[in-house]
Length: 428
Image (cartoon, one colour):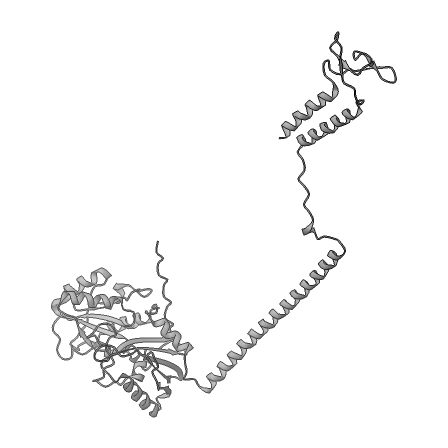
């Protein structure tokens, strides 16, 4: 059974993430000029422009500035190698502040990219034709519509908002609503517009994801995986006035609440955040001193661990030497160690002991028989005994008392032999 993928960690509240695509060549020059201008205007504390892209063709820019009131922000922009016939370059921007991110702070994208109307950096990274911070009309083709909305629902890099135009808007209604958002959210939102006659097709495409656009309203799409605490009803707006008579306060509030939810890091976001934290090069003197102190403390801890290990090894070697000396001394005196003593044979069973006893008894009886004598048979009684001996019927010991006679027709050694054979068979 395949294992389910492990859930991605949640994005820290101090982190700002965005991704996009610069259409056409000249992306590195545009970023370099923007950083130099803001450095000259003292908007940035410092910036770092790469001189050589290296073998990978990837370019990394760094910048540091102060958000009000004196909150240090560090940001890292990565430009991928050029792709396609036009030389487009995908970019990933990650910024981290010293405290939780405030949407009213300046947008990190505005620190690296020019805000001129003809800028080419604000294209969506995956779907051609989509742009950040402006109005994106939904296509009339149903197949293309489903493909675009499926991407919008699953995307976790940007916040996707679908707005239905209840009627064809005038010039004021065609202005993007995201321009009214705080600056820190402006470049993270993609605004989709559905024409008046396309409401049913849009909701049919969103039905599989449990989302729905009210007529003349809007909905904030969940992303995949959805943010913790997301509910379609809470992020749907019944009415959005595009004619300018009323500000879309409900929609703006829904976008702000959605941006504040603890969302998982997008694909590639964890690697970008790790690179910002571990490969940061634009350090101040204080940061370099703090880093040097951390390295000294780490090396000192490692040295202490090595010293403790050395002492333990030395103590173990001394004990092993002492044990070896004792062993050699015992061996020279002829005393074997317990490990080298021969094991005792296993104890005999009771039947074997009985058989051996009968064997010894048989040997003893045979040794008491006079040499050269054979038992003689009495034709009258059938008893056998040595020549010249008294009748086996009655015998007496030294005191004259009668003694029991052996069984008729058998001598004592033969009985012992038969019992020994029986015991041996039982033992076997």
